[in-house]
Length: 91
Image (tube, rainbow, N blue to C red; front, side):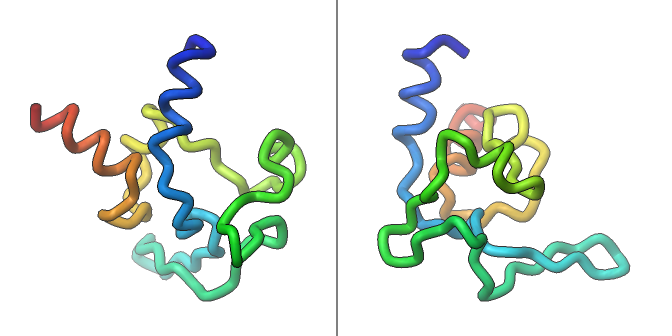
């Protein structure tokens, strides 16, 4: 992605922080969110305190790109990235 595309992509985020809460996976592979936030999530602002280094700071952090969003089924339906993807697929 170009710098302009990256900035646009990141501007889509509504900063709900839902992707930054730990998830549990059951035996069937279903993913369930928990009430436990990532240690770097500021729960008041819903911003990552180490955003620019998040991938190296937290091994479980998955960068949300158009490609990964297409593959992740645990993102909430009201996630701005999910909505963006659905608009592209349906439109």
